[in-house]
Length: 130
Image (cartoon, rainbow, N blue to C red; front, side):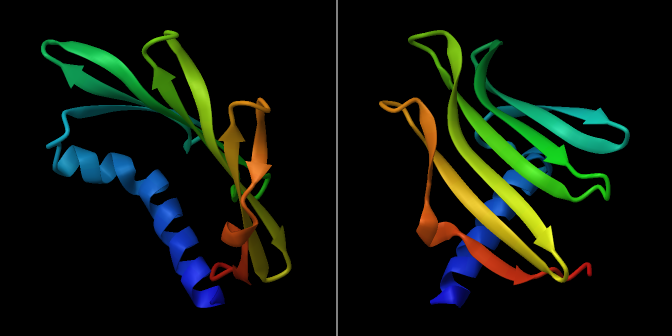
């Protein structure tokens, strides 16, 4: 069971972090990526979708790191075309203790206007970089 949850978290993290590289190589969805870096670290990324000759907002990602340059949080937002604004979608928090890293997932609850923990997706594993 833990292996299945672990694999889900690894796949989701890989999709979020490597989406730009994949899309640049094979852009069948007409997605355009604009990354923001600070001190050599990617801190944000805005994804646009081609709409004819125009670019339309699609997804937005932000990343936070600790003093050791380990990711501590990633957040994704979706563009709401009806309201013409970004809306929260998913937040992933990473905490490090010794050789272990815990990945905790939160999904945005529109009615409550807050992130809600998704406990079945929380995983603790050995950090391969320790």
